[in-house]
Figure 1 (cartoon, rainbow, N blue to C red):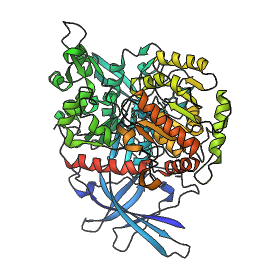
Figure 2 (figure 1 turned 180 degrees about the vertical axis):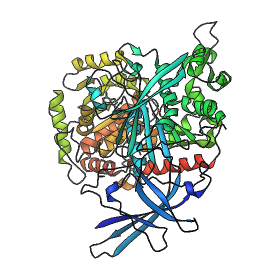
Figure 3 (figure 1 turned 60 degrees about the horizontal axis):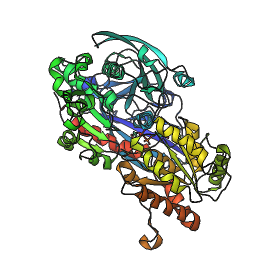
Figure 4 (figure 1 turned 180 degrees about the horizontal axis):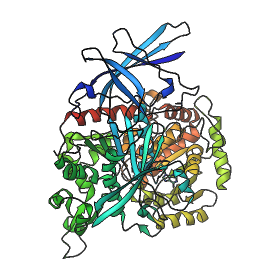
Length: 632
Ligand SMILES: Nc1ncnc2c1ncn2[C@@H]1O[C@H](COP(=O)(O)OP(=O)(O)O[C@H]2O[C@H](CO)[C@@H](O)[C@H](O)[C@H]2O)[C@@H](O)[C@H]1O
């Protein structure tokens, strides 16, 4: 069987940068390598046929992206078609409407199936404090490391801008293939000119762009070290935002810039100055008039709040203070003379971005409530018309029990035996008694207030009375790190606490455990429960935000025993409610083996690919460009 893609350029969508059709350009899908393109004109002269053969494992082969489609004209000068040619030099790309037809042929060359879909492609610029595998402290890194690749697979031109962190550890190896882009620029902020350099790697169809500055080179993680958060984080992420606004204008990637008509996807407060800069610094000078920005909120608890005096450092016109202005309620002030005034970067992004997204539908609603809005619920409610929730996907090839290189035995729905082997191997690795039938419960995550770690702390004495084993992997609050160490001594045969951040171990725990516990106080989406399900590990979660959206409660008595549930979502947020859910899960595991296997299979069959989410993102992109910029 071979697959042929027909790509036809029909029209530009709102090509305001290029007044006449002669300016139309199209950047072909990154899924196809240049050498695989076969140019063919159809009789009407307007259709080009592009042929692609994928490699055996379905992966993409070598890609060259300095490619331009030039216009074919008839003698009168009218456009009649397109030519595909290699190109170099500065070249602006605008949005195009691409009709993609997939035709499947059998060996006798008979057409069996034809599927035609319309896609508008965009120049997308992610701005983020972390992007895996280069940098990751949590789910933000996962999302910004995988969603861009999916969008590039859909034919969009995608750049991800994040800092080039170097901390002198083996993690620096993650940047081994990142090269100096030979572009230094000076940014106006913090009382003078700050010089930064751009680095770049083109990988999996995405331009990974890194902002380099000495303040990104230090021990610790992207935000802090063992002494706490870095004191100059506002400076470090202000640089990121200024640099990200310049990158589409100044960086020649694959021979041409991204240009002004791009879509900024601004992730969390670290990137929050981008929409404020677009509105205050660029648009008044006629730049980025056709760009749009979408704020993606992964965690509202962190807002980038600093003293008012720091406003002058941000490189914003002074009359824009109001956008970032923030006054703490009286109860949150520290002393009688504290006026509560501050600058809040996330708030600035909420009031200037064209649209707002969060990482699940449930969380999109929660942040408009007093309980979930962290003081921003009223502002967020006022923008409800442009606020949407899209549940994250996961990197399904990185998290795949049938091929995971971090786990000792692979398995799949058709052969589950590897799972119990992963479990006994994990028990052995952790020095726990090897008991294949003893329910093994896992927790992976940051040890902080959000993750409900206090609930686990209070529940452990009761839980340890049952015939169970418990393993925790996490770092964060030193109080809980020390508690994990001491609990190991108290429950030698039942409890293990691994303090640290370790990706291979997180895979082994995900595969080896029977149950994954996530008692998060709030959870915008949550990825660990999705990874767990893919590995047939049943989630027990607090029914909040994305956890409630993704973990359908299993009720053995519902629907005459054929409940489609895939885990347990407990509520309210109390120790007893969590223990009840865990006891039900443990009982089901021990006494109802076939029910448990059904749960495992249903979990593993769930579709958490990025494909689903990417289509929803594309819908929101379209809406963003239908409306004029929120702040003109
Ligand atoms: N000690 C450790 N060792 C190894 N790996 C570890 C680890 N601790 C955590 N991880 C990994 O970090 C990621 C955590 O992702 P989550 O989505 O669960 O939470 P996080 O709160 O960071 O993300 C925020 O952003 C994401 C993305 O939008 C939202 O899903 C989430 O709700 C929101 O709080 C997972 O890949 C997990 O395996």
